[in-house]
Image (tube, rainbow, N blue to C red; front, side, top):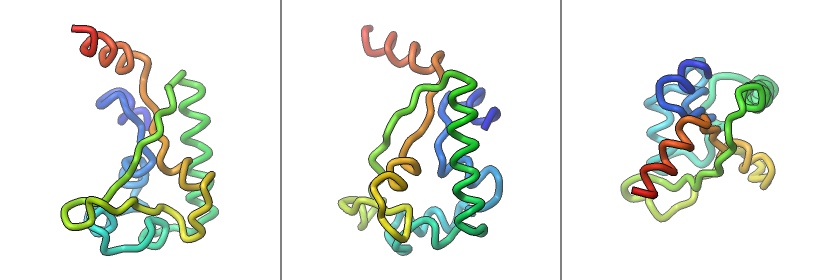
Length: 117
């Protein structure tokens, strides 16, 4: 998470899952292309471990004063009009957690400055 924060300024659950090895880039691309019905199906760990990972992300974000930012995830290519699902249940709170990225204050300030100019 620290590496993502310092290199891109954004810590997104999907990116963290790839970094820690519970989601391969290839499987993620299948999900983004609408070939997989929900993201949890293709993760290589159980739901308990995914839940712990998401909790650790929120703790890291709070400690580093990262700003939460909800992202609308839609498919790529032929699936571009389809809203992507993260969980089997489709529970709104779970979906929102997966779709929330955390942005560093520095990145937020850079974006605000760029918007003003």
